[in-house]
Image (cartoon, rainbow, N blue to C red):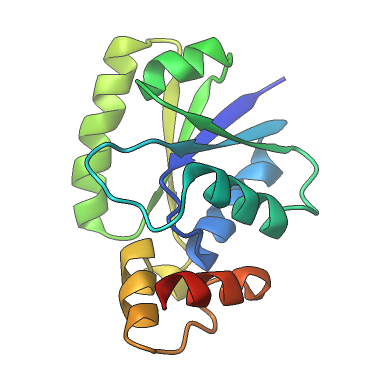
Length: 158
């Protein structure tokens, strides 16, 4: 069984994240969507809220598991016996950072590969930070986040 991990902060989950989740889950037997605890960020949603939002928008995808992890991704991948780390790329700037992280993860856990998945062009501009800024300023979030969770995001940004 081929297991992959798609890590991220998902604060909040966007249609770009959901696109990567759907496409990755079609490739691997099991996809672990791993909500990270990032000490350098102040999240809008708690870890548990982010997990619940992702679970709601992925309820029809049978082969995923939504979890949280704290610590090194390479260690967590080894613990979960995941052979692949999936990373979505929007632009060249994403690649530079993610390439460094992939090399470090490979150094820490040689059994794990990183798969870079290009974001669909519809979402190449999209990030959780952009969603939060647009929402906080009263902008339209339609098409940026899944409809099922749009109200929760709007309420949190008020």
